[in-house]
Length: 253
Image (cartoon, rainbow, N blue to C red; front, side, top):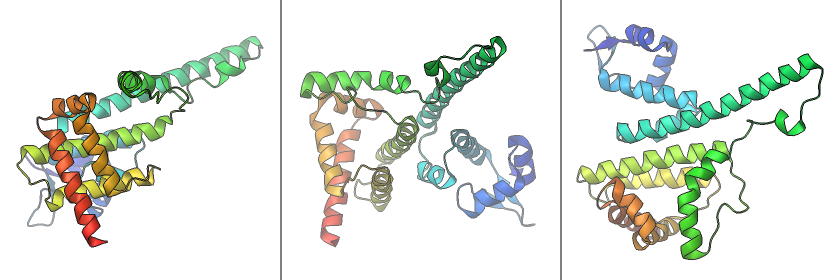
């Protein structure tokens, strides 16, 4: 079944103007244009719009959403990651709401509010520390590295990076399942955008650094198992793709 832009706007509560803008920037394309010039959308486009709206609820900018959805990443892992991010936000907002209610109670009683209680919920690292605890324990036992000992977690930054990493790895896994060669331009483009994102967020990774990182993943049981659980052969495919990308970059410099 196909829907006009007006019908999609009614279904999704997204304005027609916004849908037109999504089309112009290449974020949400109609599946066809009718002979009368109407934009038409199918189920696939509605699913993509839903994913866009989930990211918008997380305050992701449109250009970043476009990058995250590039290559049409597998829908189920993407939805699972979006659910995790939204639940984390829900928990944070509930904490802030409790803080607000305590503020009201303190004012009604004419009592000063505890300074520490006054700011609860405005940053929430606990969920991320729990999520990283397994990997951190492994790194401590195997390499003597405690990444969480003194590190301050930037929650918003971690949320953005986790969403991008999930979209990137889902795209690579999809390419492997589709039989796309590891040195294909589509894969090079995915790696290029991934590195650009990381470097924009302060990681300073070169193509060679990324290749070294993927070699480490192949030789480290924890990370190898994590990648292979997502898709058999993924660690090896990713490493080969990273090596090919680094070699291509080196030859062009």
